[in-house]
Length: 397
Image (cartoon, rainbow, N blue to C red):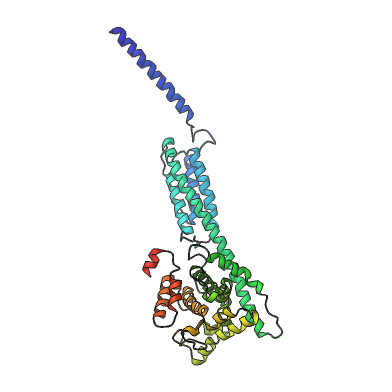
């Protein structure tokens, strides 16, 4: 019995010794992060780095964050990537959003949450390693969001350049009709604008590409160009979803939308911004913009008969109360009937000096009510209303 007890004690001793040696080897493999110079960040440096990162992203003062006294190599790499994302977000405009409605603010909030998660980690290599993979996934999604925001801003910048091209072209088109001896403008000047409208029109998300500034646009040509852009985009999407009216080519549909209100450049600016009711003379000047626009387009592009008809008759109404010719129902060309719907809806989307922008759903409701009383073509109102992709928004309407 004594011999068996001795053997058992010896065996236990060997196991204990082996365990201690294994533990020593395991500890030797764990980096002593935060102790040797260059392998970690001391507490003050961690707090400062995290605070500065959040402050740069949010643009406001950040309270001193708690932090672990050391961070693993993986966590330091994570913070480095977070800093790179913060730098990318810094150059985006404050209201920049993706086609799905995610904004720069969403990305900043997500980045702040990641940084705060790192700041509150315990001084445990094991816990930090366990949390690392989840934070990596969050950061990967955030990098994708930053990339989408950058792409969206690039498209916005390109769209704004094309709007400026369109505004100058409309101004030149109007000026050329006022000065004798001016030759016709080159049609090719509008080709890049038409191409970009079609690029946006073929995308899945209906909102993408619409230009809705936060405040009223004071420059008349730019406002007419912005409205023309939106009308052309919605008309193109309606034709892609349904069919072009009477076999009109899609490019001519877009052209008609872009220049549909060029005649408004002949209306005095003070009258365009007038809040009071118009006199009969004022109304005659305003209604004259349709004929002026059609005449300008005929001089510039004599072969674009369908576009000219849309410019001339997009204020005609099926019940005969429209202008300039008081056409009834089927007398109005189908392209002009589509133009009337999009002109009403898109006109409400833009903020004016006397009212804010109207949300899309409410603008569509106005069009639906107008169709019910004979002011718009119900078929094209239905096509435009169906452009909304979200089931919730369709239900709300």
